[in-house]
Image 1 (cartoon, rainbow, N blue to C red):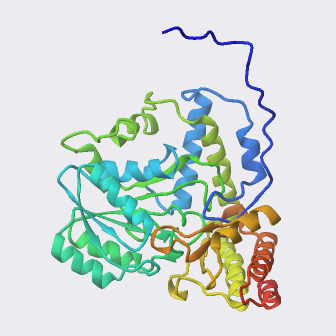
Image 2 (image 1 turned 90 degrees about the vertical axis):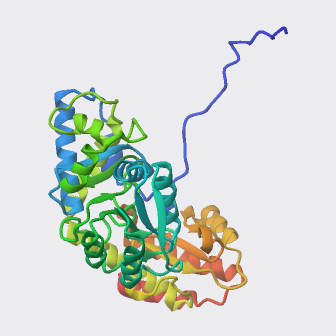
Image 3 (image 1 turned 120 degrees about the vertical axis):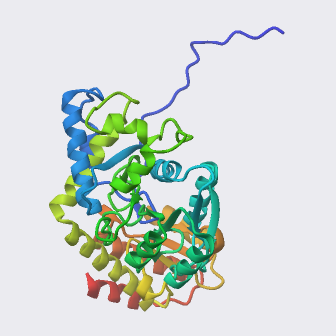
Amino acid sequence: MHQPELDTTDAPEVGELTPPTRTLMGPGPSDVHPRVLRAMSTPLVGHLDPSFIEIMDDTQELLRYTFRTDNKWTIPVSGTGSASMEAAIGNLVEPGETMLVPTNGYFGGRMAEMARRAGGDVVEVDAPWGEPLDPVDVQAAFDEHQPDVFGFVHAETSTGVRQPDVPELTSIAHDHGAYVIADCVTSLGGVPLKVDEWDIDAAYSGPQKCLSCPPGASPLTLNDRAMDKVLSREEPARSWYLDLSLLEGYWGEERAYHHTAPITNVYALREALRLVAEEGIESRWARHRETAGALKAGVEAMGLEMNAADESWLPSLNAVRVPEGVDDGAVISDLLDGYDLEIASGLGDLAGEIFRIGCMGHSARPANVSLLVSALGQTLAEHGADVDVGAGVEATASRL
């Protein structure tokens, strides 16, 4: 069959990249600090260059500070937060082992899917979407199933729920000889997280949330107990790229080639973590709590309802119930078109029922929160919702 010759002079005409300037108040990514953007524009060096080895060392030490851990095996995984998630689960869950996962949010379901792909058997501990796990239920699940690995979501992005009682959960797991994996994607750098004190074996996160860093190099930490399990597996992890026994050669003392690291993303993560250290981790936690508290006060004062109870409220991700009769998608579109302001709708069981409003990292600033409360209130009023915009704006201002 005759193929027509291509006109190689007919190159596509693509203009200069000019994305709009948005205020990012959704579930991620968050606004990126100018210093992080500047770091990404610095010259590349090789991924085994002595200067880059020093940058790797800096990044690991800053990650330990932010995770509140002394774990030697603390690294940025090359990839998005889902890569660090799969690295943790795919290395700690061996074929034929059982993993206990929660059912109270979207990302517990993703844990289950990754565990199955790693060859594990999945059992569940139930809780409604919008509620944290009850330690009593976790204890009962352990007594019934005797799982090898237990995963939980510290900050559930799909529901706006923070899991309290973490030390109690890890104690239950360790009493049964299990390993604990914590999803900290929406908590690292934004709400209190203490990996060593809470006795978490492995924790993973994403850089684009409370660290305000573009995705591409994602935090992961494992304690010695977890890493010993990885290194003593009877068969290798199913992913060559995410096999931590191989990555140990690159991120450990040897610094041997495994793959070409995302050099610019590591630059960015290092600078984002420097900002965390300069602010101080406890001061950063307090800033998130205070700015998100002003947001929460504003939406409640205008007559809206939070999805999570106060005792499990997640400052970094505020799930706000959509008023009856309001089209959440239309409100979200109007905020983007009219205010260059991004928020998101619900996922899974909460699709169409909540707005997901982030208050993370560089986005967790008074000006952003004030804009969000005012714009959301006015837009909801235009869509027929019974809201008191003035009361919301006043309540927010009084907290900032």
